[in-house]
Amino acid sequence: MVSRNRKIVLAVTGASGSIYARKLLEKLQQLKNPPEEVAVIFSEIAKDIWEAETGQKYSPTPPAKEYNNKTFYAPFASGSSRYDTMIICPASMGMTGRIANGTSEDLIARTADVMLKERRRLIIVPRETPYSLIHINNMKTLTLAGAIICPATPSFYSNPKTIDDLVMTVVNRIIDLAGFDSNSFRWMEND
Image (spheres, rainbow, N blue to C red):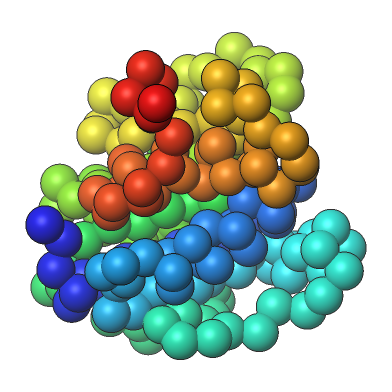
């Protein structure tokens, strides 16, 4: 079972799909064993996209705590920290490429680099279509380095009735990949 003292990082980048990040934060708070902290980092444009797509400004509520992407003064910028999982949702192709190439130029890229070098869980949720060969090669590089690529591709076998239901098919998959019990629909297991 997952312990309550887990600390994870959620990075929100400038790709469309802020609803995935918003629903993911809500779901993490509702878990039976929620993480002790969710460190939230926004890329430069991500907050504007969040507000445009959700109709509201981001405001952290516990266990979420916001960190500035322009500084490395955050515990998870070092491998000595106890943060065990990073989720980048949604992940822009620009950020994905920077991480694949090890630039570490901001807190998001540095934290992803730390997760990879320390062999911790890095889940990248790209929200782009179609993919170019450059995108595919960057995702291949990250997969070979140990990251999990989980495209924001909803599933339909649970018969979602609303947009929120459809979004939750992706969010629940992310929760599972992060090692939390999401108590969600599972193919051929729900009767």
